[in-house]
Length: 339
Ligand code: PEP
Ligand code: MN
Image (cartoon, rainbow, N blue to C red; front, side, top):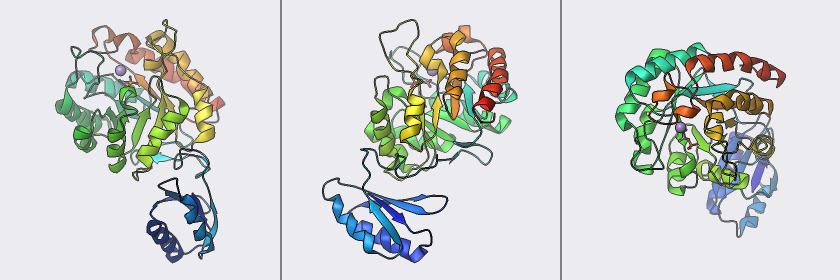
């Protein structure tokens, strides 16, 4: 249920409403709007109509049921797109298109510092790199783990770029959060509900990737797991879904962008690298994503793709990345955005 507060409701009236929601056995989530606050009361769907009695409290405008199965993620609860603060300089969901770029995996300090410098020079605002890698084969490179996190922290120190890196299990989530500015939940973990709950308890922005065979509604339900633990800083990522097509690694579902935008206030970014699997398709899919309304991109860039430990074929060289960024500006402008 959504409790819509009056624009002039006092702090005391709001506190009384929060207290009452808790007394009724539900969890209140305050969502601050531009003109008024609303309170999402979430919990057991059965018996939720008891919350209707809150309508008679002081400062309350109305109590309305949220019809969608995802509650806190829905536009019903918050009309304006959420602007998520990553660092003092970087926010996602506002007018500016945010480009997160870097290699699939952290391989060495030299590789990381060189790539971070290069992507920054081309205009990327966030640096990516996996220290914990969830690989299909147990014999593939599994990542540099904490040593990799330390290298990422060094790249932030050198370039000032905030860092996004993947969290693969609840046990290492806090360790990763000590170093990262954005916690990435990968495709293979997008319905790992214990991990989603864990990152929901950590106060760091989370980028949630769509599972390979996940519907849009399931993606929003996974986001709901994070939001319902009290972490409202969730960014959704379309990274391609599995279809019968084999020319591309996955099929980029571009329609998911407007479909998500219609249903949720959470920012949406696109990963053109994993969705195509081929460096030569990355630029065109990046342009298409921005034209379709994405708030940002997550792009793999490697200084020497041929020798990359993982995902070399889909990684752009710094030079190709720079050329793509130059062209991206025009698409951003046509879409009423900035880069
Ligand atoms: C990655 O970003 O390197 C990654 C493993 O992506 P995904 O989870 O989308 O496969
Ligand atoms: Mn990768």
